[in-house]
Amino acid sequence: MQKTVITDLILKCRQNDQHAFRKLVEMHQAMIFSFIFKMLCNEEEAKDAVQETFIKVWKHIDKYNTELKFSTWLFAIASNLCCDKIKFRKRKFTFNKLIMKIFFYQTKISKCLPSIPIWRKLL
Image (cartoon, rainbow, N blue to C red; front, side, top):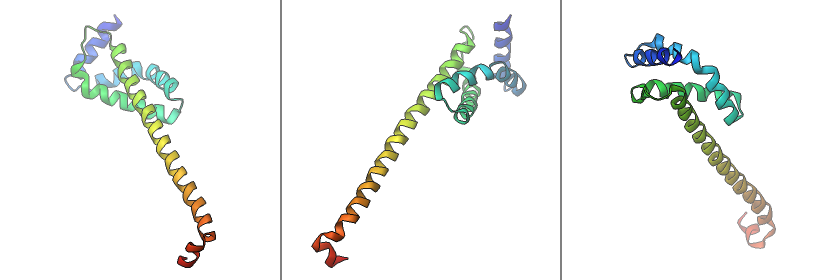
């Protein structure tokens, strides 16, 4: 029963039926939020990721194979999105760490420079 309802909603979504898509979102939103929140451990980021997940679903609903389970496809999209966000987080952290090191060394060097005789003349 549930599978046929979801399949009918997906077929309607493929015809740009926004009401059908809203029902599809309502049916899966809590489950996807819970999954994403467990992966990202941040409520605001999880809310954004849920929206992004359903935007991707809407854009690519025509690529979904109705013979397969919809929730599996939905979780795959959500999981890939979370992995991308976690990778970005790591890159952002590494970049911020690099900036902090540069700032630290510049501060350290600028404190040492005035004590070196040649720099006294230039300053």
